[in-house]
Amino acid sequence: MTNRTAVLCWLGLLALLAVTLLAGALDSSALRYSLHFLCAAAMAALVMLVFMRLYTSSPLLRLVAVGGVMWIALLILLTLADTLTRS
Amino acid sequence: MPTSNSGRSGESRPEVQFDDMEQQRHAGLLGMWVFLLTELLLFGAIFASFAILRVRHGAVFAEAAGHLDLSLAAVNTALLLSSGLTMALAELSAGARLRRATIGWLQATMALGALFLAIKGFEWYSEFRHQLMPVLGLPFHYSSALAAPGEQPVAAVAELFFNLYFIATGLHAVHMLVGLGILAVMLALARRWRRPDRIDRQLRIAGLYWAFIDVVWIFIFTCFYLLRA
Image (cartoon, rainbow over all chains, first blue to last red; front, top):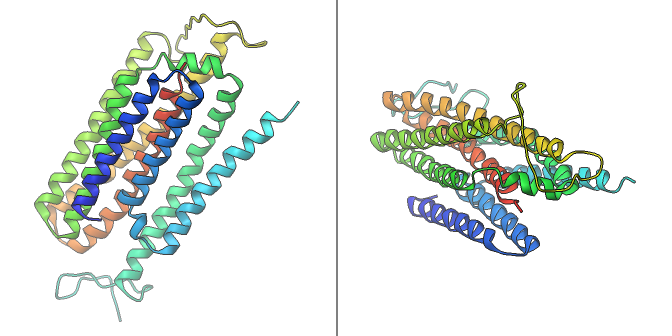
């Protein structure tokens, strides 16, 4: 990471924040919510790749980070699948 | 035999269990990542609870989210993202052995973090004044135009929303306070500037924690503030 990369990442994060706030004006709640989550995922990815330096980290650190995100996704998806399919 | 003392050049030697400094640095970063994953599980349980309740009581949760102050939360998000930048610049300055710049960026990060907490405190006070703070036995009064969803009254479901909101933002604020404490220690070490290479390694690890707080807030902001009617 260089000073320039860090500043560009910050500008990208602020742009994504602006996009997600502007998306709040959309009428379709499905489209609005999708955009909110897309922006959130993109912002989190930017922070992890640049500020947490995953893009220059060793493969082991990347594996740990991706594994952690996968586990939390499984936790939420399987919990949802269980509770929402009960009669 | 290698020791933890610094060498004649002022750069540290590795601890006895490591072959070289690169291995020691990598072990420190890996340890922090594993710790952050346990933290992720803690917040993950809150987000999983939120997801279930949000799907079950979509209309009430969307209406309740409308009672939160989106403008203040957006300002806070911008502040926290900016603190991520200043923390990254502090790390880079320490890496370049620039003492004054490291101290300056660390102070900027702490100021932004403290401002975030001050705004969050003002927001909580505003919710307390509007009797929307169902914690510690405080009164909770919620009026709604929605019909009761099933057997539960709307206010009871809205109370669930605010319970989760205060748990998530409260836990996040505690992490911010811990982060500020870590930064205060790093600032004191940077002022002394006795072992710059060690400060560089420690700042990398502290920076991971601070960035993690950023990531958690991004999802709190999205789930609780943006998913409104």
